[in-house]
Length: 244
Image (cartoon, rainbow, N blue to C red):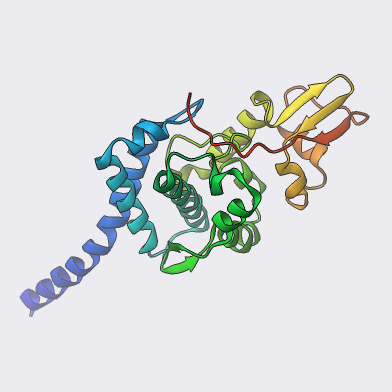
């Protein structure tokens, strides 16, 4: 009887392992690719595109994301997964069409197709970048710092994080990304005399930054923005975030 139980347990574990291993493998592979090709100045798309084995590795990451099972993950783990999924799919699409002027070729209608076409597979569902961000991540997690973690492959977007997100450390990571973008990046805040130009992200998603944009920025700003300062929004640059 004991032997039969051991055989049954062994068989059960063997069924689990093939499902768990790919999820672990794609995350590890993705983390390595990010460390190899993401810099402070952007993404080394040219080098990545010219390396067939690493393009294939990203394809395997995409396959892992497409078939991932989120059952049993805590909320932070789920959010980390969706952030990774969005960014990995963006990289995959850009490399597919490389050389690229930016998402959708840089034009309005091209961008509209790029972000709204339902041609992504994420955790068994078919979706789009638009739905993934605005129909799932934003309403489900209600976390404004995701805007500093999602990367749309554009110059004005917050820099792509050079590591795969992990649920266990996600809160600390998002705080670092928010602090870095808001304090050190002219794409986020540009002070000009008595006025300040901030990223268009704070206009598009103003409802996420409560109670208002100035107050939210000052949570992270080392040099606080005075109440009297006039806030305007920068023009968003859709050119590719390619490392030069």
